Length: 114
Length: 112
Image (tube, rainbow over all chains, first blue to last red; front, side):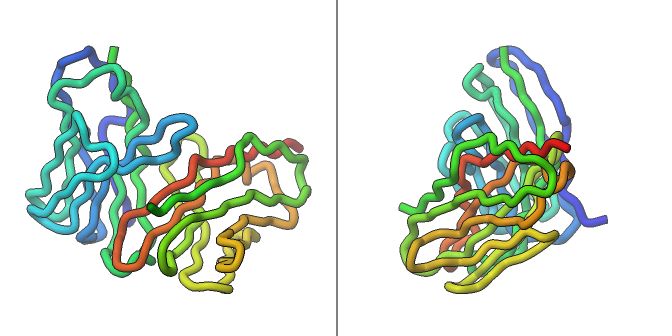
């Protein structure tokens, strides 16, 4: 089954404790992206990657890192989480090209930073 | 820059009622337009899309028409079901970019 898999689904942590949210897709998509979803703000892009070893900042990259060492994986790293990073996070992937390819989303990771 | 504005929710309807969720956009050129749906506890799924002016996207009884003159892409369904209860997101992407810009989402609640 074609899918984007994120882990974990739920994560509670404390300020400053490094964490990684994993994302993997089995559709051989070049394009991958991370979004955060907050009430009243919709989804905002954190980082994206056009292909292996190619990553770039989205609209809200501060406090986050990503890597793209393999096509299928695109982990999101929070080196020193803070409470304002409490949010619902989504990984997504697609075939890149001219803006009309639909994004395939994972089921989300709900992160709480205390 | 590009942006999407959707009507505030929640929208509360009885089963079999007519649904409209308004979406307007600001963009340079001719963006592609999308509606995504998010069911409780799940990620977003593409519901329908339109890639040029006057195109109508449709799926599962939902429709939306790309109106260049009013910069709108309103979502409609003639007869909603309880199973349509979800959050609906309007989104756009510009030409030659894969970045999606989302609206804030509209929660739909359908009661029997």
